Image (cartoon, rainbow over all chains, first blue to last red; front, top):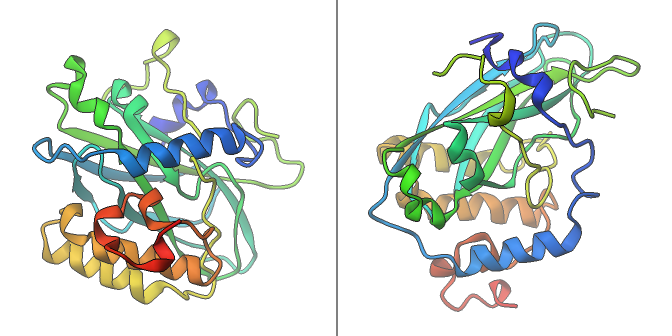
Length: 171
Length: 90
């Protein structure tokens, strides 16, 4: 798996600070949507989880579950775990990918651990949650009819001061 | 899995999360709630619908310990589990 998602990284735009983007207007709209959405209970989707680290990051990073079964319109929680096995604090920053590509527009992350620097102290291990839902409109898209598996992949990179990350747009 | 040669118009654009990033639970304050949730998943063939109470409790733990912004549970999709709890109502 190592290297497969890295090859596509130059095409990502990384957002440094989530708070500056979209603002409360977007968040408010998203909350209303979540409050009013109705689960499509007969449309079960398997979400599988991948974890990668860029070669220079010495973290152990893995999902805490290989898969979870969800339905569109139902919020779901999943966990990754990261450990810094070194004797120095290490700061990482992550991005993610969704396969199949076309399902990505329906994959909504309410909150997670991506796009912001995360610091792990020496020997520290933390849980990293992802809280998400599949948009109910997924069930109405004819292109999604055969999609019953969506794979979520996170990749962590090391964020060092002065270090240039191999992703455009990272500040 | 598709090859990495999927460049061009079909590139995936990651989006930031709606509510930003979870602060790291450095002290493991909500770890027991996470364990309960993971145990539920293991016991229920990883079916999210059967472990929503546990996921709600994990998020409530975060909110109580300021590891997540306080929010009515309905806005997190747990409206069907709240049934009259005053703290969850706006």
